[in-house]
Image 1 (cartoon, rainbow, N blue to C red):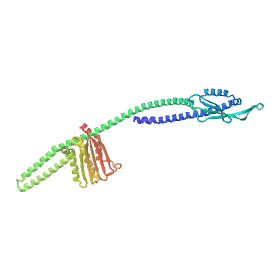
Image 2 (cartoon, helix red, strand yellow):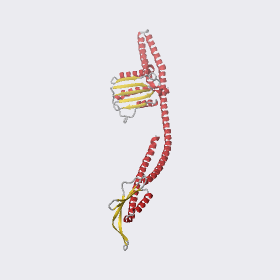
Image 3 (cartoon, rainbow, N blue to C red):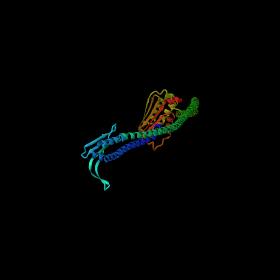
Image 4 (cartoon, rainbow, N blue to C red):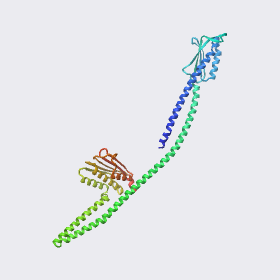
Length: 410
């Protein structure tokens, strides 16, 4: 997050600074070229004006000395060439040094003029020669480069200051965001612990109720059945009419006791899956799938179990059992499927549960989660697992539960 914030803050500044530096560099280059052109024209015109008398009297040495002086004082001047009217070189003076001459040159004509005393002016009567001046941008470019380097250093200093300020601001923001995220994680962990405690409390209460029903209610019903059987036995030794009535009532009591006993066992199974205690998780799931298939022959139910289920017990086994139970109940009630599959695979410290059917499915965007799906999600979240559902073709529920979390909580 800090890297992204720094990128958002500094990238526009870097792009703007690079654009300005590029524009400044190109401007410096253009200024040097414009200055050389202006100075070259002026120097050519000045030398042409001063070369008239030298050409007329053939005093080229004096002109050479003048040109050498100009070359020494002006570092941008590279070469001066004097041509006659037929453009034959008369004088060629070049500057010494590492200067690089421009490809272009600046030329000015040397005119022959007559002085009119009465008119008070001069008149051009012909061209005696030409002066060609070549300029060198090396010195001016060196000065421009030095100024540009100074400007670049100032810009880099400003960028470093901006980077330091941005780093400090993002550090504070990152610390605040980290604290907020830790608070959210703590709240989420507390929520999971609370859900886990609630689920554990509900299952413990169900277990206690199941034990109470089994130990008290069923024991009473068994005693009633035994008493009724004794009445039946006594009646068989009495008079025939009385015995028949006693036998009928005894048989009715026996049927009622058996009905109550079966109801008690059914209630026990609903409150506490006793198959888990008797058969373990894999055996309980096999029995559940078998009973569901036999009760609903229109749909074919299959189970695939892989891995070691011996270490999965307690809250973990109950959670997996209830999830598969609710998924099968939804298939029977709503799917209208012809085939359904249950896969429970143990890999390392995770248990993967996959329940799929070829039924009609549903649109999660238009259909809210029912109590069953919400309960499944809460169970999975309480144990820190993942829940995924695909309803595009039929319905498929994929759940991953961490075994390590179960062991830590048991």
